[in-house]
Each structure stands twice: as structure tokens, then as C-alpha cells.
Image (cartoon, rainbow, N blue to C red; front, side, top):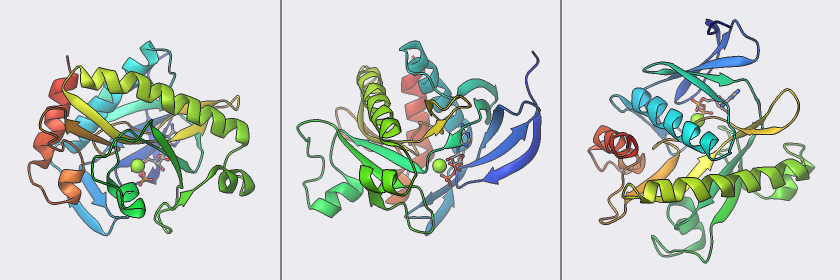
Length: 238
Ligand code: ADP
Ligand code: MG
């Protein structure tokens, strides 16, 4: 079958434009250079970000599929566009923390870069208005955002992503500090990994120097933002 083509834009998020296609089971993501932080209070652009995030996400999704972790990625169409399986997004963001930084460090007053005894999974309710508040399994189940079975599956897949991505990156001199994943339901009701995996949604530190190579450079005005995304692209290309 020929590659589906774009029809109308169905949503525009903070980082991507989402298009319906001639195939009702597929969507096209257009990756923008727009960057937001702190619940969109800080806005800017990161040169070439869209192109780099498309490429990095595609690479990670392909690697994960090769390791038996299925996901929505179908194919890359051009520099900024990818074809994905259309999902019914579960409004629960899943965060996995290998090292403690960001909101978790603040909330619990932990030491920056502390290594917990094992990876920590957190759930947040996906809501721009509320600033993606932290929730637990009971909230998600009681408010009908996900079933107990789906949450168990989300936890299993998130740990599996970490188990593959962490060593893949470590071999390339990158520490996988934490990351955010989104999952959705397929036509047959199974849980599939979606959205993107890139320096917008992960924290990457240089393994030797602990230099930040992700969106924290934008959040914290550290400079060399595009350069960091380019560095992740360069190191993961091998
Ligand atoms: P946001 O501002 O919510 O972060 P983005 O700019 O990242 O939005 O655009 C991605 C949007 O598409 C998000 O709402 C995300 O939940 C949704 N999404 C991700 N993958 C899929 C998919 N496979 N099918 C349908 N929607 C998806
Ligand atoms: Mg997003």
C-alpha cells in the first residue's frame, strides 16, 4: 500500500502538529522548533529541534522495536515528519527516574543527582490547565483514566524501555537520568507506546562530566541548546 498522505490538522500541541491522513489508522506528526517549559510560562524556539527530535525519536523507537518493545512508530517521511499508528491516548504521563533531579528533587528535598536504590516510576495527569499534577494509580483508576491492568502494562513497558535505553545510551557516553513516556490504546484495546522520546522528554547527562544534554539547557538558560540536541543525535547515530 502507498504511504498515507496528510489531510487536516487535528491538533497542535506544544512541540508537534498532528495531522489525520488518508489512512484512518495513521497520523502524521510534524515536529516543530517551538520550545516551552514550566507549563508553557517560558516560550522560545530551539533551532533545528524539530528535525533532531524526529530523527532521535525514530532511532529510539526503531531500536526498542528491535528489542521487542512495540510502539506507534511506522516510518519517517521527511526531516520533520513521521507516520505513526493512531492511538487513543491515555491521559497519564509516565515518568521513570534513574537519578533524582527536577520536580522530584524539589518536592522531597533530595540531593541533586542522588541515585535511588532502583528506578522510580511516577504518574502525572496529562492536563495543561493543571500543570500535569502528580497522581497515583488509585486516581487514574477511580477517575477512569486507565484500568489497573493498563497501569500494570504501562509499568512493565516503561521498565522495559529503561532496561534497553539506559545501556544503549551508556555505551555512547550518555547517562539516562529520567524520561517521560505516553501510552495509548490501539483498535484492539492493547497498550502501545506513543508520542516521542527525545531531549525534550528525557534528561541526558554526559556520563563523564554530567553536562546536561537536553531541554534543561533551555529551561535553565544554560546556552548551547541546539548544540546539545545535535550532540545527542551525533552520539546515538552510531
Ligand atoms: P503536548 O503539548 O501535549 O506535549 P505535543 O506537541 O507533544 O503535545 O503533541 C503530541 C500530542 O499528540 C499529545 O497530545 C500526545 O498525547 C498526542 N499523541 C502522541 N502520540 C499519539 C498517537 N500515536 N496517536 C494519537 N495521539 C498521539
Ligand atoms: Mg508533548
